[in-house]
Image (cartoon, rainbow, N blue to C red; front, side):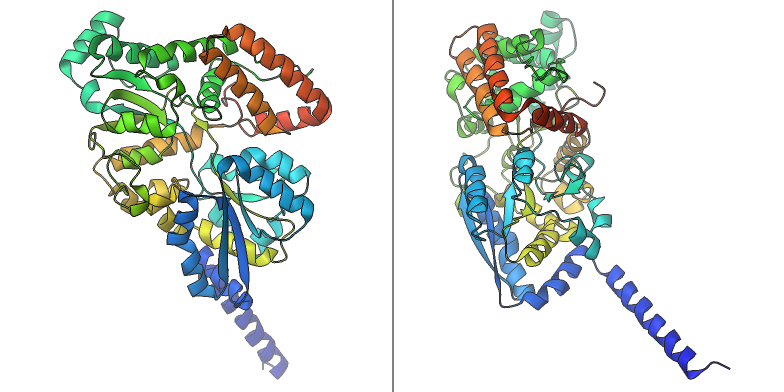
Length: 479
């Protein structure tokens, strides 16, 4: 006969099991909402990129979070080039002004080493988020989130650089015959940068000024991402890992930079100084055959989201239903991207974490990604497989397939100690070469400047950061 104590214990165990099953049955966003309700009436502050990112959070997340939890959300935005310094200033002042910080993963070594970001592994375990993290594409769930074995952020933006090309031009029988005659191989989406240059030259030589072969960003601070991809795929390395002396001025570095300079000849007039907006305008106007860019232009080329009042600066597309997608060189650059982190000086760390888990979750992140104004690009496996995203335009499934390939095989943007300073050095060399300086001379100067910077940072410290970056797929995985 069962004793009263035995019956009571059995009932208690059943209650615990029942409660555990109920929690397990909840989605990650539901878990975060229920846990956050105890903070109702409070406020958290999110620091993020001003402009569309800020508007995207406002339209797809912050109001809903307040409605569900009773927690008010204040947003503070800053231009991209000011974000890092503002995070550092806030941290050093220990003001507690920021709770959630939307960071570029390339800043991770610096921000973690100075103690500006809160490790979140304990929260992930407490709120059962580890399983759902597996849905994030491999690249965005690994190197972007961790540093020295600890997790500090959730990858939240699939900023992969892929090829966009005019299918109608590539499938034209006359163009195919002309290209085969002139170059000796079939006209297809270029598989590598050599083929990219052949195709770019082909269209410009044969159709300019009505049509040019390609357009690329050439503005300071952005061009390095595109050069970096070609440099690494050509076997280029930033440092000798033993001595930590820069090898940026190697044959791979010089040939890649020379190719970048030469390519400008086959772009529209003035492209040597173009930023993102000018490049976008030429692409949407149908003036070029192909470009390499971030995922947002895939939507905008189809007119998706451009009817929003905040998007009036985007020209009307003339190329809807004419665009194909591919990856140049198999391993695209993923840069710069954003990840949701918790500020170490926050007085509301748990509440901040819960917002991040909710916003980054499978269900809510899909809703945010569906809002074109958010410029939050697909980064989860469930995003790539989403019927809703695939239905946004006729060829959207091919677009998602290409982004998935990029997210699985991409390379990490340079991420070291004092990353911004190294990037400035590289940008100086690129801009000098575009302006007429011999690429070898420009990169020799860059290598010297990088060596001086490494000495100031500390050779051993930088070597550790460089090895961690390599392990996080800074270079192609087969290298």
